[in-house]
Image 1 (tube, rainbow, N blue to C red):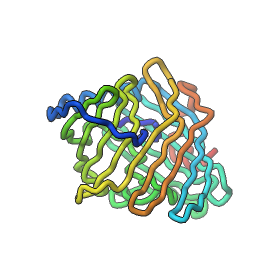
Image 2: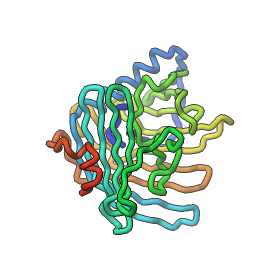
Image 3: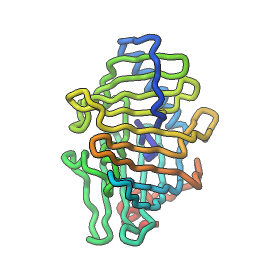
Length: 255
């Protein structure tokens, strides 16, 4: 995915989809996913404010506010998110750059004053205590997946795909709304074919004539009975963003 921290990443409702037809042709499944990604990449930049609410197994919550910037330039994508509240995480930043098919992720922690490069071994780690991992926040390029099958119903496509480079997930299933090609649900499975996480998107808004984006996403960790909600506000599309935002200087500078 050339997703906007999506970040634009990565969206859904957990309603059942009753399949009418299963197609095992990988290229047909890939074509649906590529159309979804093409629509996401139809915009050049996005700025937004995000509210993150983390709920633990006992129902206790932690709230955080983030600023986000994202840019798409052909096949290259870049996104930056910076925490603005509360004070104990203010200035913490995460930079994701994908250039020439190579992804680099960097995390800046003001408390230690240094920039950390996220390694392949750390891709499965939780991002700032949330239920999103660093892998979840990275680009989801169609070329990273091997598509197994496509199911269709009156309203949705459901695609199953494996991601050979992932140590977290054996395979994933995507529910895509037919009318808008918006990604509504993602289900993540382990090697035992058990669903371990579920991502859901809701409150879709039309951003351009071809793109619908969710105003809210929730990642459920089914193993630990936790969840993390992300809610977008003050979204600006195709607004000017300074080049320095997507550099280590921008990562250190913060808001």
